[in-house]
Amino acid sequence: MPTSDDEQDREPVDAPEFTRLLSRPRSMLVFVVIVFVVTTVQAMANPFGAIITDDYTWDYRLPLAVVVAVVIAGCAAQSALLLLSARAPVVAVLGTTVCYLGLIVGVDVPRWLTGMALVVAVAAFFLAVHRRALPTIATTAVAIALACAVMFSYAVGAGLPLRAAWGYTFADGLAFAAPVIGGAALGAWWAGRMRRLRRASAQVAAAAREHEAEVERAKALERARIAQELHDVAGQHLAGLLSLADAAVEIELLDAGQAASLIEEMRAEGRFASASLYAALRDLRAESGSHAEPTRDLRALDDLVAYWTDRGMRVVLRVHAPVDDVPAMVSTTAYRLVQEALTNICKHAAGSEAAIDVRVGPSVVRVSVENTPGRSTAADDHPHGLGWGLTGLAERVELLHGTFQAGPSPYGDGWLVVMEAPVSIDEGAVRAQRA
Image 1 (tube, rainbow, N blue to C red):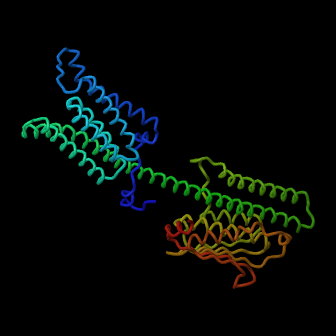
Image 2: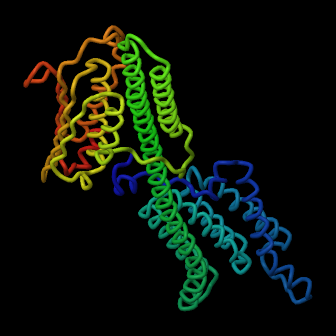
Image 3: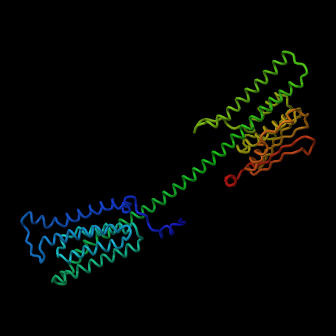
């Protein structure tokens, strides 16, 4: 595959769209027949026009019928040579030129044959389309030089004075050279346009493939985001239900009021879970351009803390600087960290106290969630979810070129989850890492 314009220029040029008929024998045969008919009609127009008007005297060495037959045969042979334009365009140009010159010398009626120069011009056009500039120029120059030499020899042999022979050669040679050079120039221009068009088409195709790959990559990332969203939402609300269930187990005796209140809380929690899951699942069915709920970030920490406080968890939130200007990727990741940490505390350390600490510096955001030891619950005997929580958080923080830690607290017997992420993210590095 070419890697530069120079390499592309050394490659053969494919036929333009309309000249691809050269690779279709039936279509090319129709084209050749049309050229033959047009050339023959043009050649016969002069003598037949004179005969019709009774203004014609035939004093040539060959009978008129013989000359007409030879000219028609010559036009047929010249047109047939165009069939070689696809495989041997040089032969086609020189062959059509020889047919034209052979008729001039053989039947001595040059004025009949001016239309045959146009057939040579057609062959020169195809030559320029299929070959590079150098062979096109060389072949065209040889054809013109051959035509001028034959015309001059014919004029001298016919007994014309030298000056008259030069005049005849100049006039008829120029009449031959002009369409031939024009055909070659038009073919070269057309070939250049086709090269640029194919190059542009290849670039468009490459861009389309790249765009499609980007779309697929974006879809994959969005599916992963929705899966993480489902995990986070389900984990939080199911943990809330478990917390309410634990409270029910610990109450030794329920009166009617307590039972109704607890059941109402569990129903409300179920409705919260259902609504949150519906919002996440709605993204899977959202059409292009549809409105989607904004992803929660550090600005929603108060609501998250209130959620768990209402369910009996003791949570202390300390925010040491405004979080409004924290980059969206960092802020949403930090929120997910706090959400996942509180959910895990509810599931695995019920009854413990949680402390959330948010520090926003000029270059780094640090968020930590630490909890004290909790009492053992029945939830500890069950599998710990899908394993997406901490793993997903670690992957998110890694994309931000930050650090993530989760493990026993060094300050006590509890658990500590902490992340640090730079405020300014190298987007190019992020894209490279995603790729």
